[in-house]
Every structure is written in C-alpha cells, then in structure tokens.
Image 1: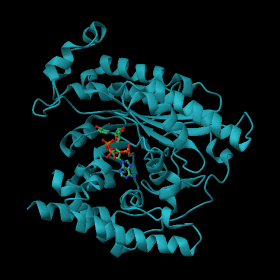
Image 2: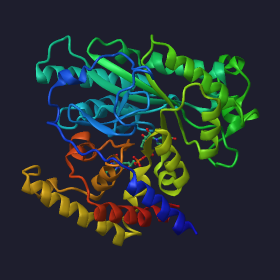
Image 3: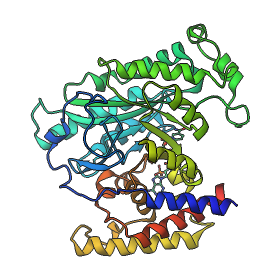
Length: 400
Ligand SMILES: NC(=O)c1ccc[n+]([C@@H]2O[C@H](COP(=O)([O-])OP(=O)(O)OC[C@H]3O[C@@H](n4cnc5c(N)ncnc54)[C@H](OP(=O)(O)O)[C@@H]3O)[C@@H](O)[C@H]2O)c1
C-alpha cells in the first residue's frame, strides 16, 4: 500500500514541469539583483507561468503566484549554532556560492544574526566587485510564526518581532530584503512527542498571554485568525513581506485556508518526507500555483546511505554521468569537484521548481549545496529523473 502511494507521488514529482532549463552567466551583473523593491500586485503579476523557474543573474528562481520570485536554492539556519550564523551566511553569499535565500523562524531566535550575516555578506560582495554604493543586493528570508503565537494579536506580535530583528538588513541601503512570512505549524499537536503544548504556553511572557487566547485550546481555529494577520502584513506596503504561506500544513488544513483566505497562500514549506509521500498535496499545490519549499532533505535522505547503499550507488552513478558531461563542457576542473549524491538530490528537486534549504556549517558542504553549484548541473533526462526518484524512495524509507 505504502509503496504504491510513494510511487504515484514520485511519478507526480517526476512529471511536474517545467524544469528550469536556461542558464545565464553566474552573477552576470549585480545590477540585475537590484531589480527594484516594488511588490508586484496580483494584477500586475508577471506573464511567467506559475511555478516556472527563471534565472535572476544566474541564480535559479521560481516565480510565485503573485509575480514575486523566490530563489530555488537556499540555506537553512533554523537550529544552527548561533555563533556561526553570520559567518556561514556571509560565506554563502560569496560570488562563487550565490546563496540568496535564508530559511529561519521566529522560534529559532536568530533573525538578528541572519540580518547581521546578510549585511556582512553584502559588504564583502560590494568590496569584491567594486560595485557602486547605489547598487542593492536582493536577498530573501523565509521566517515563520511559531504555534504558540497563533491567533491574530499573537501572530502580529511575532511577525513584528521578526521584522524588527531583521531591521539591520531591511534598512540597509545596499540590500533589497524580501521577506516570505509563514505560519510554522497549523497547531500544537499533543501526539507529537517534542511538542509540549501546555508547558510552552506557560513559559510565554505575560504580554503574549494577554494578547490573545492560548491557541492550543482552540486548535481548529487559532491559525485562521493568524492568516488574517498575515494578510494585513502582506498588504502593508511599508514592510518587506512579499509573500505569505504555511509550513507543515496538510491538505485538509490547506484547502480550508484557501476557502477563507482573501489572499491565497503563495508558498508551502514541508518536510521532504511529506513531499514524497503526499501525492495529493503535491498535485494540489501544483494546480493552485503554490510554490513548495522542502526541508529535511539531508537528514532524511542523504544521511541514510549506509542502510540503503544500493540506492546511494545509483545516485553516485548519475553524479558520475553528469560530472562527465560537465567536464566535457569545461565546467568541472578535477576529480575533487565531481558531483555528489547530495547535489543530485538537490538538483532533482530544484529542476522541478522546488526550493531547497539544506542546513550546513561545513564550508565544503556550503559550496556543494550552493546556488552556483546546483544551477550548473545539467538538466536530468527522464531516465535519470526516475532513477533519482526510486533511489530517494529507498533512502528515505529507513527513517519512515
Ligand atoms: N518548517 C519546518 O518546520 C522546519 C523544520 C526543520 C527544519 N527547517 C528548516 O530547514 C533547514 C534544514 O534543516 P533540516 O532539519 O531539514 O536538516 P537537513 O538540511 O536535512 O540536514 C542537515 C544535516 O545535513 C548535513 N549536510 C548538509 N549538507 C550536506 C551535504 N552536502 N552532504 C552531506 N551532509 C550534509 C549537515 O551537516 P554539516 O553541517 O556537517 O554539513 C547537517 O548535519 C533548517 O535550518 C530550517 O531552517 C524547517
């Protein structure tokens, strides 16, 4: 039973089109990044097909349903050791990595460090490329409202604290910061072992408790009020929120949200596991033009190489084949630069217009996972797409 669900899901993923197919000189001109700070209204949405990828200065991007863009390759800093965050981000932004999307959340408590990393990275880019002080580097941050802050007033407080923490980057004259704001979870689930609904409520500051009812006492409805708050924040032109969305929502909550929303969700962030095992969710998002972001790719797939070495070897074979193609084009220099299975899985998702946000504090992995590296990987043929899909199914299984 499970196998048939997985296969149909993988087939949907395999047939989602279009894949991004054009490349442009990487970092072909930083001026292109300074593509204006005006939000496209729904009316003024670009003619791009929803979900179609395009390139912004060589950085693979997806166009959201409101015409805004989101980079397809990002860096997750949620749960990252705080001390290293600014350095990892500024390294990631370097011209040979080109990471322009940072994924975090309000509950991670590191948004100030994210802003600091973006400011440091921008300074380095400007110095290195001798760019004039009027140029602006476009950066995207995904941040999320935790489930203790569901309800209109609580969500407003959390979102404003996120924007306040990001202020150093928002106000910087050389940064065009675009914020993608999401609800982290639809509710606190009593049956998820690490969620402690009552204890988390108890430990909140008094000001938050007074701002609105405890969301875990109304788990079916609290997020609905939160969505209204996100809509208000999105409509407010004075802040940099360019898209609103949800994370860890299943299809039933998502469709309920769509019925009551005056602004439809632009983005959904999900565990890679859900993306692979929930064909209805994928199909729905594809149909409704909701852009998908996947997390838990390394933890749930690549780090399972040992118990599923056969599948891992299939990924290695594809990595070798595509490395040869890149070598013949002069895009890879030596053996040490050969593609890795991790890059094949990231490229497989990115080539289907799904954003990825792997977390790493390892500078080698940062380069390996970077927009520069992933965008150079040739478009996979149908056979390779199917092989990656089957390998991912085998690799993801041991932790399921
Ligand atoms: N929406 C949500 O509810 C939610 C939940 C969890 C996470 N997230 C977001 O997703 C981000 C990613 O976190 P995750 O939990 O999904 O973890 P992940 O990215 O799947 O895995 C991170 C682990 O993979 C390793 N790694 C990274 N690149 C690698 C590579 N190329 N080859 C081999 N290993 C590699 C890292 O080690 P090294 O440091 O040694 O590279 C780290 O141990 C978080 O930072 C957060 O922003 C969102």
